[in-house]
Image: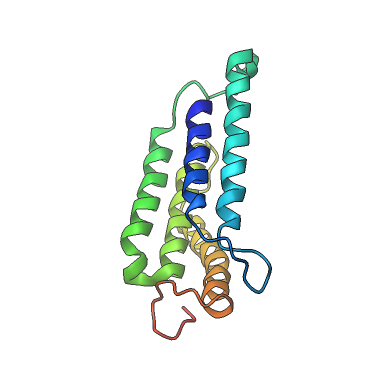
Length: 157
C-alpha cells in the first residue's frame, strides 16, 4: 500500500508538470492543487512504507468485529458510487450526490447492530445529502462559473 501510494503521488507529480503554472487573479495557478495532492500522497506513501517496514500497526489490537469484512456495507457504498456516476447527468449533481450520501450512510450504518431502521434514516440521509451537495453545486456554478450537471437549466438545482 505504501509503495503504491508513493507511486501514485509520483505519477500525479509527473502529470502536474504538464499543467501550466501561470497564476490567475488570486496568485495561484491551475497546477497548485495537483502539486499539493501529489506531495501529500508521496508523504503518506512514505509513512505507510515506514510503518510497514518497522512493524507499525501490526502490534495494535484489532477492534472487535474487525476480523470479518462487512461485505454488505461494501456493496451499499459501491452501489452508491456507481449510481452517482450513472445518474449525475440524468437527475443532476445535487440529487445524485444526495442519493449517494444516503446509500453510503445506510451501508455504513449496517455495520452497527443498533442502527436505526425504517424510512426516517433514509429521509434524513437524503436531506443531509441535499444540504451538503446544494451549496457545493451553487459554489461551483455561481461563484466559480464551473458547469456541473443540473436538474434544470437555471443553475440553481
